[in-house]
Each structure stands twice: as C-alpha cells, then as structure tokens.
Length: 140
Image (cartoon, rainbow, N blue to C red; front, side, top):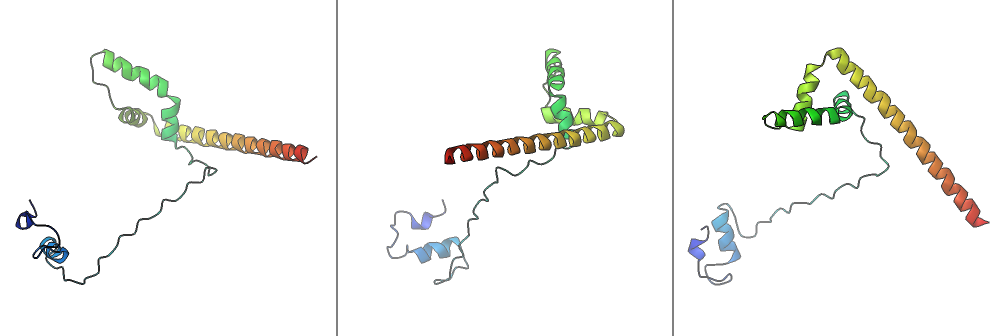
C-alpha cells in the first residue's frame, strides 16, 4: 500500500497534512506550488446537415457484396472452419481482384455518391418548397 506510513491517521493530524501526502507522492513537491489544471475540451457539435464522406471503392465493394460474402463465410463455418472476421475477409477479397476492377469499383462508388447527393439535394429542395407553401397557406 502506498500510504503505509500514514495508516491509522486522519488527514489534518500532525504528520498527515496535505503537504505531507504531496511530498510522499511527489518527491519534488514544494509547499505553495501551483498545480496545473487540465482543461477539458468541449466536444464539437456535429452538423446534421453536413454531407457524409464519399465512399471509397473498397467500402462500396464491401457494401455491394455483403450478402455474397456473408453466404461464403457461412459456408466456411459449415465446412468446419473458423468464422473469419468480416473486415479481414473483405480485405482478402479486395486484394484478389485486379487493379482495373478496383478502379471500376472506385468509379462506381463515385457515381453512386453523386447520384445520392443529387437525390438528397432534390429531397431538400422539395422539403423547402413544401415548407414555404405551408407557411404561405397559414399566413392567409
């Protein structure tokens, strides 16, 4: 135990003051030293309207083949093998495809992201129009 020399004493008694404890724990402590306070950083609030990061070809490849990979992994387990980790299995499959196929997946991911962004913009515009129409109707 760290405080064996203070056992049975109450803080504030002679020989067991805050300074005595600090000297015991921190040999270079001098009475009157200021203790640096660590500042707790406030978390930044996330913007719910911020667009999501674009998918890479790798992540798009994993998403589009999820069902296929799950079936393959289930078959491995049925055959008596150990269930592989999903991410490791996708990584293995990704490394097995050619560079040309990887580029194709990257292009597919980019076009899917553009289509999704266009759809989100259209939805946002429709929602804004509906809100404006509702406001105009209520003001009448």
